[in-house]
Length: 192
Image (cartoon, rainbow, N blue to C red; front, top):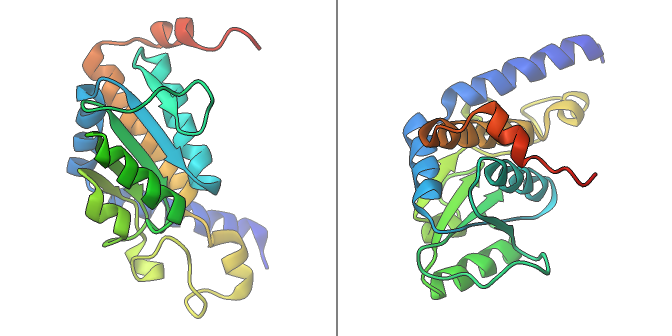
């Protein structure tokens, strides 16, 4: 495998995935976060790591955020939003969290790599991060579409693209709130 070629192909693929993201969905997610009293985030695995970064970034622009599962996370209520990051939209624990949040009157936001998942059916606002050209709308490159060697590099392109989308949601929120990079720096963790 030519690693440089694969790296360039991966960057091209990620670029195409970003071009396919519906900006109306991104704007709706940003507005839902701004409208919420508090933002809760949840995800598992890589998607969980990405969604935690969204929580951190939102706190740095002055919004109240919590990560589901942390001991300091308060109860969720009406007026709050739970934003779930999930490649498949089918992760069992995330489905349970969405049902629980809904039962307490919270809204559900979803950043997902597929259409028509069980969590999307419960979601009030969804951002789709898909790759129609290489994976038939899936979030992971499937066998037969790419070689096994290519799949090792490109199988999980969803995750870095999801992170870029999360960064952009934060940027939209910051711009709408009039938050400056200096404000974010002030709110950055200073117990390191």
